[in-house]
Image (tube, rainbow, N blue to C red):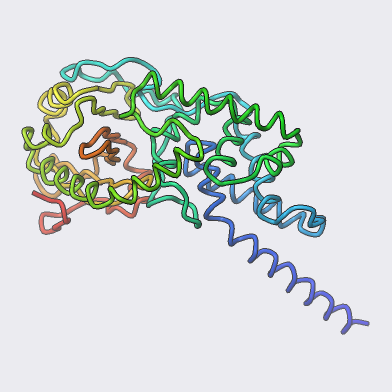
Length: 353
């Protein structure tokens, strides 16, 4: 009996391990989904871990009436909706107030605000989806939707779930799921009309997402060149070159400061005024939200080496840079993006002056 019991235990453990391995295969795409839902990569990782634990614990009760993927997204959606139950939403500075003049020193940082955070690398999903759907501006726009509408739009227009699958996931009718999708699309289209095309891909329809994907693919080389020129110009503090690279309505925001600027003149006024200490910085290339990004290191006050200062995430419109988000939380963000905690005099990042 003992041998039989032991053999049964081994088989049970083997089945459980196989199930856990199968569930683990979905971690990447679930992280992309939860990041769009929550606006925080760290919270998305926690949400996915919780969802996978819940799934593993209930794997014996999975009846197979839906695909494993749909079942996992149902669990992940519940985890995200629970996390969003407080009603607090994440934002970027432009969601809180109008633009300010570039020469104005910033007010104290608003640490109480829940900021939309960047995610490392390209699209964090394992499967290839529309790059535009993970851009900072789009993720920030999603936060304006009620949580269930947000989930419906991401599942339908980004991840390609059917109306029936989304309805079943929410325990709703197909008609109500379609209605939620239409309301979500209308809200994002309205925000795009208000904020302008440079603000990001707010119109999330299947056709728009497909077109954005094609455009993003064709513009990869253009964006790479623009990013390299930006890094060189910033490191040299060449304001004329920076001005040539920026879109007419380009924005610069500085979380956790609520202050932000619109237009090359105000961005230049900021860089040559309150931010003049950034002169002589070095930039180390990385990637965030499917876009080129850079870790900025300012000269150390003692004159030896360079210290972390900000993570620059770039956005593009055509052949110009349309947005710069400079996140100052380097202690938390730089390790996540694989950036060093200091640069020495002999360090030669690819984008230094």
